[in-house]
Length: 446
Image (cartoon, rainbow, N blue to C red; front, top):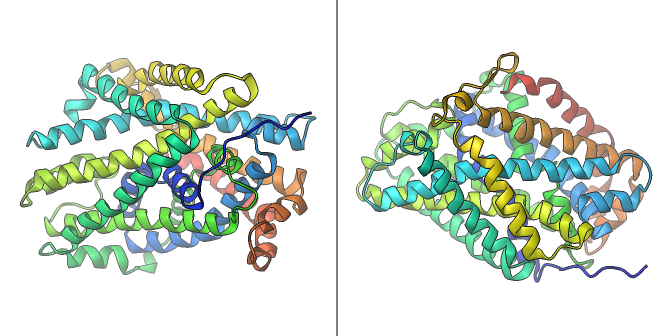
């Protein structure tokens, strides 16, 4: 059988930035600070960093190895290794998870677009103006998805890689600008102490589990993105170093986001634990009190939009790659169809934050979930990703064994053999056990 041709990343830096872009998103800049505040500050940051390198790094290598070895999408890649049995279902789960996350992720991505416009019009953005207005919520979501569709339609090198090379450095520069402004505000020192000086007495079992979950979600593990992006890597690519740079960049963005938010909160004497609305509800009030606040507001929400777009690109690429590989669709057809479908399926989420009462009041009382959006986020953004990562670790560690993936990771790397024993232990034993614990406790994180 003739081997199918497959697009490859044009450069190492393109591969790293595109993969980092898939991981860096609203979870780093919105969810990470919110969980840090909820969990007592620096203690959570300390545990989170341990979790990223102990669990996240080996699991990224796990998915990279599977993707490059098979040079296929997750479904076809797993089927190539295990033709018989239901193992390919793990790939379908990953693709479905990524796509369904995109449907509601685009809603929040749309909010960032709306906040940019409001800031440039010298207005103080208010979340209620977007979530309670059906036309505004759906319209902004449509703009966000249109940007994502246009980039993905251009393909790997001319689309995803090209734009991530531009967007990711810009995101980093914008964060640095905002961080410098935040830490130089009068009264910001207390925020730095809260964020960077751990109080180990506040570290509890629930804090550890929250940190594990955040590390997992932040790095895009379990939704097939890393498998697919790994499938575009050349055999000469050093997957070990690339994964390390992705982890460093992703973690750096999250840490910098905290350095933007917490010093500013303390400087303006704002309450720290504001829940999930921390970014969208509190920061506009802070910017309003700054000199040239409208400019900093526009910069920050442009940054947030960049982060959301790079993740949206990765989420859309999952079903697109499957349709191109397995159904022989053209990229244009696959992107157009899946983009339209994502928009249609995203409408209930867009209307479930106050615009339509029955969607907003929908409940699963046993899980303390209220609203269609939150229900989708729990089952796909939490349960789906964790389950997918767990099953992939089991597949590689026990079905595929560890010899072939280890050989794949040694290609182009002269250092992996030092890490190999720890990686094998984590994939076969450590990660499955830790993720199983997360799954058992996930229903407490709604």
